[in-house]
Amino acid sequence: MPQDSDIGFKGEIPSASSFLFEVDGVQIGMFAEVSGLEVRIDVTTYREGGENGFEHRLPGRMSWPNILLRRGVCQSDALFSWVNKTAGPGFASAGNKLERSTGAITVIGSDGSRLRSWELHDVFAVRWSGPRFAAGENSELDEELELAHHGITSKTF
Image (cartoon, rainbow, N blue to C red; front, side, top):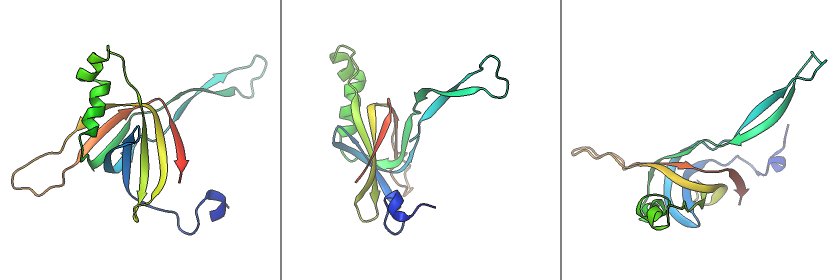
């Protein structure tokens, strides 16, 4: 069984209180939920002639699903400035050339420290959903942001 020092933690395993999303070093927003941080590797099978006891299994293509950031609020116009570079008027003025960015999702601990980060390569927004407003309700202002990308690397602090 691994010891705390073997896995990089001293004492209790840290827990997250929120997640910061940044693009090219610019803070986009804080979120309470993140899903889709995963990689899928296809498996290719090869049946060797004369060997009926097993088949070879080899790693194939890697793919990364979209990432969904939920229950957050973007407090600046950085999100829409970035989205306009990858779609809409900014995309058209760049000659319909997609400007890809480097994104980062960072776990923020309850004391405000950065615990771990996942860097997203060639990230761009594919969907944003704003808060729902209803007169007479005292509900939280939540935003959702869905991202496409070409891979993930991780980093500890």
